[in-house]
Image (cartoon, rainbow, N blue to C red; front, side, top):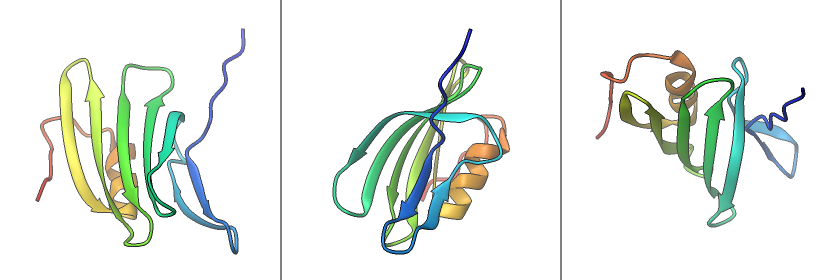
Length: 100
């Protein structure tokens, strides 16, 4: 049996610079919607498992929001792209939530 995993990677088109990724864990993107040239909404899930994440990123500003969903509930985080990546990959319990 095989499974398809679409790693969440965003590159800047002019020079192929990696702008955002969730490498280091098995995350797969299910849905990607571009609202503008720099604002993207991604629905991703960790494989295998019961954790998913909704990411809304503003690549020009370098910030965004993330919502992590599990069977236990949800948690929200707002920060820079690097902080969002670290938060999503951290696997911290859902009691941790940082929101401005």
